[in-house]
Image: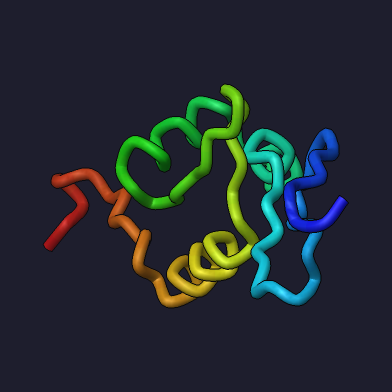
Length: 89
């Protein structure tokens, strides 16, 4: 099977190793591994925080996107002040 795609339940990999391929992980599995709810995952997708790929109705996220997400999170890009207005100076 030259070229094409090999689809596993939680991972999608390109079959041609000579191409620069990106591994895709099931979005739901990635969320579960992180301990994040489906609702939060939906919000992140809606806000453009994480970009997913839809393959036959199932969502996947690439390892490159996950790496970029972690980099941005560590940089504090998603930090939010949760202090109510009354405790701000």
